[in-house]
Image (tube, rainbow, N blue to C red; front, top):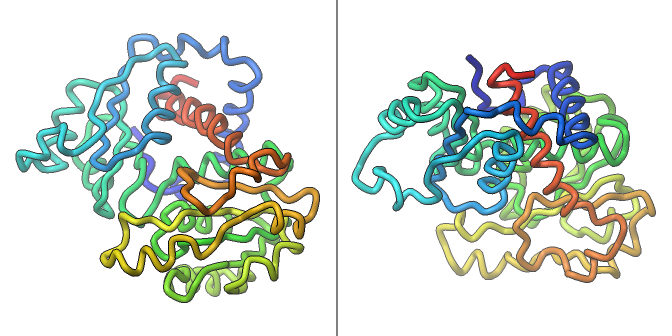
Length: 303
């Protein structure tokens, strides 16, 4: 039995196999439509989510399986004080695999330690979001044909953004990746990420102005400023519109640059950018279903 807590739980070779399977599913989804017949996925979401939860559910239903679970802690026995370890023991009796999101870092790992079924971390606080990272990597590989030799700008909330942290961890294993971190001082990438990059001799730079580096990017990964991660409402209001990607800024970028975003967006990408052929964030959503289908099949040893 195998759990997924971090994108680093897979070797680069295993990731290639997973992405190959996801692309086969994309090309011929009907061939995979009954592989999970009789299997149940539990979605245990202690924190609100639309995309991730529905993506997991869509993936399992597309494989012919079924879904059960809860979409908010208030809809579970957690509201009565039940522990994560007790919840997963109970869920293990009802289902074959579990996807868990939790606001506390490490909660899915506690679940995995007490589970008799595979547990997938669907996001734990500001820590990790491995399946979003798998989605990001599949999107990049599918649309550019590679996962190496590019410059990627990560913009916005780099302090609390678990999608950013997970993606950085995953990309440092590929050759010739240059990171440009674009954020206000208050939302800079954490020190431990910088230490990780230095340890692996990965090149990076930190800037404040998005306009200054648009012309150098192969990929731009936009993020929202997350209200739920702030302790002070005034700080959130002051920083929430610090970056807004509009067509004027897009005109500064190369014709091949792709714009990614884990969604949901608020104001950080103008809707006018949606019409730009370089906007890839809604394609990411579809790739998220394919990669989660592939992941479920791998963890249940059905492929």
